[in-house]
Amino acid sequence: MIRRHKKKRKLNADINVVPYIDVMMVLLVIFMITAPMLTQGVNVELPKASAEPVDDSDNEPVIVTVDAEGRYYIDVGGDPKVPVEAEVVEERVAKILASNPRKMLLVRGDRNVDYDKVVQLMVLLQQAGAPSVGLVTE
Image 1 (cartoon, rainbow, N blue to C red):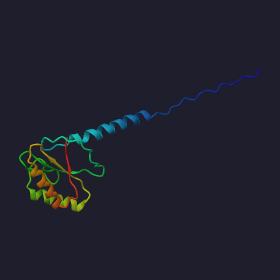
Image 2: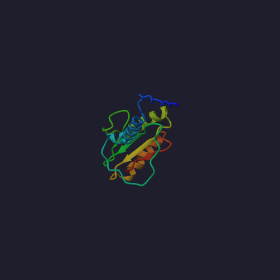
Image 3: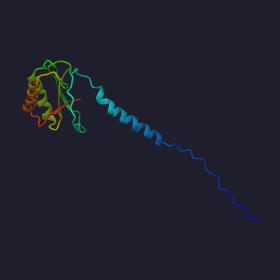
């Protein structure tokens, strides 16, 4: 009689890391979505518009804000909650664009601010050397 030997199975002591990678990817996506929402600044009521979001994958944009009273705020080079004069905005933007000409500039205008103030800010940014300016909406 011929006996057949059954092969003994070896125990596999390896850890399956695929579920951990999946969890880390989900956490990464959650943090990538929530991080931009955590930015602090001056409260303004943004106008609503249906537009495609701007691609800002290369670097973080410079945001210049116009509140309801027409005061300017810039989020670089000082306290972003302190209003600055138009000349200071132009000077800071010119310095930023001198070091990084591809830096994205965004304008946040309060819904109740005069349209003229937003246009004046956009002209100011153009004089500082900005090739294009984006508008922030909700």
